[in-house]
Length: 386
Image (cartoon, rainbow, N blue to C red; front, side):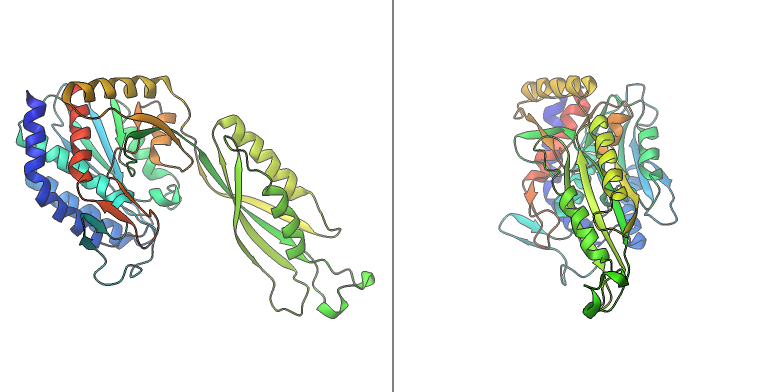
């Protein structure tokens, strides 16, 4: 059977692609460092061109360029999209030199699991399919450039282009980190708001003199933060106010203060309710004489329940049973990802099919080396039999 040949090809490529994984992770590529993100894309492009795969580049001025690599572009079958992102979160140099190390069956480095391991597994699956002369359908690899910031730098242009490229695909397989035994079918959306609070400055020794009208912007912000922090619904809206700036010197009542609220929601209805709460808190003055302006600084749509995703999930497990791979359970994630946008666009999507690891978004992020081939086999099996 063809899948057995492909699995054998993946095993044969394993040692080489563990080296590829290390080389890709060693190219430091925080989202704002366009040069680094584009260098990751160039690495994938070089290997793809050697295979004769089709290359498309969606150029960006601020964010890195999005890359689309397509195998069998002229094939008649319905296409499958594999996807991962190239950008990471830590500033260059955060992981020391060298940035990547391998020990005890694990690889450590920037973005090794979120999400470079998944992107490498995608290319590994494609090369194994190519080695086995698979020609039944187009298989595209979409490499996103500013996922970690919710495509803010490109004004959502990058994820919009990806959705357009994948619009006719029978499956969008996203390779965010894999939690063994599970895949993600639903995710919370994220709205971030910055509140700008204004008060009135006086010398701190006169803060009790009502006739001077002292108004502490920090105190007003504190009231607003405490109100927003009440949003802690286990399966609904949550709020975390994780960034605050204000004041000038300790002996002056602060005239200004700003803070950022990270609000997460599971549905469009919850997003609308959260929006109303944000506006109400901003408009209310807890301290007479204060004022506030609020703006939304970023937004990610929720990955809501989808019958298309459900059908793809059921077929995926049927395929895994047919080829002898472990079946997976569905789970929900509170984090954002590109799969939410593709789901909203109407493309059947499954997420977290990438490599396994831990300590994501820390300087001790690691991937489990054996999970690379496992991820590639899952992606190849779905591609072959969907």
